[in-house]
Structure formats: structure tokens, C-alpha cells
Amino acid sequence: MTDPLHALIDVGARFDRQGFVPATSGNFSVREGDGCWITASGRHKGRLLATDFVRVGADGELLERRSGDARPSAETSIHLAVYRAEPKAQVVLHIHELHGTLLSLKDAVARAPWRVELPSLEILKAFGSHPSDRKLAVDVFQNHHHVPDIARDVSRHYAGRSPEVPGFLIEGHGLTAWGESLERAEFAVEAFVFLFRAMRG
Image (tube, rainbow, N blue to C red; front, top):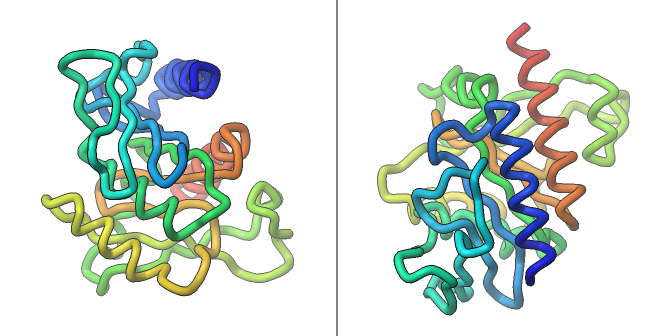
């Protein structure tokens, strides 16, 4: 697991420079078996070390840690919900980029989950879709103080079907994106951020 974890450390440094993970926000994971390695709670993503990750099982139980005080991120259940909903996903990246976070509040009066239509721009090719194919939208889930309730909503919404795009928003709580590799997950984040910025002008 050393190489994937160090690759996530590099992603954290890049995302920090771009302002995607202010303070200790955001979390990253890589699938391992039925569970994953995930950033420990309270760690600054721009200053990660290999000891800042923990391994959890399919139900979120702690299986391994490399630092005595490390505990799983509060959003672990959301990452596991993504891995269950999208079997091809190998990496999940959650960020608090400003434009997507603000867009997630736009229709907060609507019944969750609601959808934000994405503009028909060439960058949609990053999701495997041509802008002239069809209109795509990103799902927005209600934010709950009890994070497992968000994971429950994600699991219910994607039960029996794959997500339309490799990511979703949580109301006031940023973007969660994924990919079949770390590179694809990072591409997804970059594409979403580009689209969100275009939508907010």
C-alpha cells in the first residue's frame, strides 16, 4: 500500500495549493479488499504523512493504523457507500472547493437529492461523454449532522444503478469524486471544478 498512500499524499499537497481542502477539510481513500485506506480524522491534507492513514473494513471498523491516535475520517461511511455503488471505483476524493460548495446550496429548498445540470462543455469528455450526447447533471445530497445518514442516502439513491457522473455534491459540504485509478479520480475532480467555476461565472 506504500505507493498508493504516497500518491494520495502528493494529491493532498496539490489540492492544498489549489485551495480545495482548507484547514483539515476533505478526505481521500483507496480501495483495499472490501474496505479501504482512508485519511485519518483531523489531518491537514497538504501536510499528510504515511502515518496519517488508517485501514477500515467494509463496515467502517478500524483494521489498522500507523499512528497511535489515528482514527477514521468522519466521512468514512460515504467513501464505503461509493465503493459499494460503483464497483469499478478504486479511489475516492472528497474536497471542499468553493464553487461546488456554493452551487450545492442553490436549490436547497428542493427535495433531496436534487440535481444540478452541468453545462455542455468539452470537458465533459473527462466523464466519457461528449457534450452533444445528452445533458448531464450532478446529484446533490442533503447534509446530515450524522454522517452515516448521508451514506445511507447515497446507497439508497444508487441502489441498482450506476451514477451518471463520477461524483456528487453534499449540501454545503463539497464534492466527492472517484475513479478507476488515482489519475482518473483526480481528472474527475479537475473536470468538476472547471464546470462549477464556469457555472458561477
